[in-house]
Length: 138
Image (tube, rainbow, N blue to C red; front, top):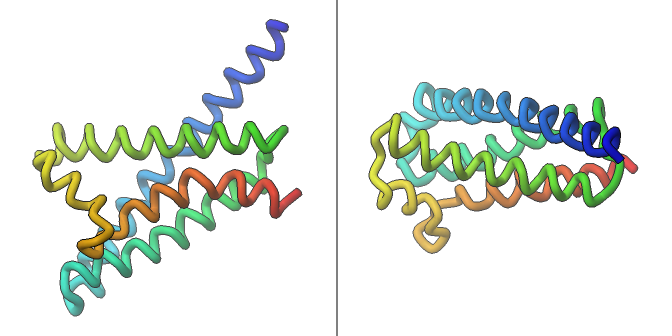
């Protein structure tokens, strides 16, 4: 029983560490937006395009991670997706508010799909991609 718990703990830490490059991918995506197409598009359109690019970049990274490490079960894939979702939301609000000094109102505005803000799609993708890729990769 102890070995199983230790292995489970190791798995969780492995996927927490695997989440860290997702932050770098998101930062790269933001820099790409600001330095290139963000100058030619409206702020709203630039963020929408950035969302699509972010989903593709994160999807590619998640695919590679899962291809290399895999999961023991569908449940494990769902747990990792939920873990990554929680880490992403926590980082966004904690870093965004306390380090980048964004207001809570501004941070919450990114969740308004009716205003054309597509950030929630990235969060859904981060949450479901591990399970989808697990099913696809067998």
